[in-house]
Amino acid sequence: MLEIIKEIPGPYFLLVYSIFAALVIFIAKKYAENDSTKDIEMPEPSKVSPVDIALLNKGIKGALIVTIFNLWRNKKIEIKKTSDNVILRQLTSDSTGLNPLESLILKNTSQIKKILKNITFYQIKN
Image (cartoon, rainbow, N blue to C red; front, side, top):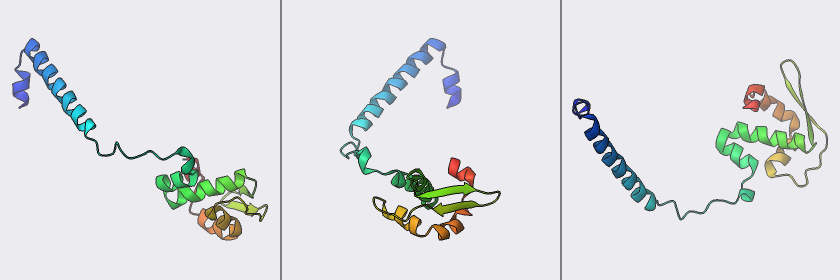
């Protein structure tokens, strides 16, 4: 097969190549027109939370990392890193306006430390 392509003279190769490219573009356009997903609506950005995106992207660990970061950003917890541990300290017990995962983590801050031992700071950065 490749030998046949190698033996085509230059001008004829360009002609064959341009016909082949036009055919591929034509087939791609026909395929794109018949796409079955074009009628599916895109979700509104306000309906998808950062925790949902983290859960889809990195799984449970990602959702935990984003939730802990949100609690820290809202000044509900304090995060400190010692030489080999991550220390979470609850600053407030007010869980109004939090999603269920955030309120669960806020209530069980001492037990979350055990889970965080398996999550390194490298994973938090990425």
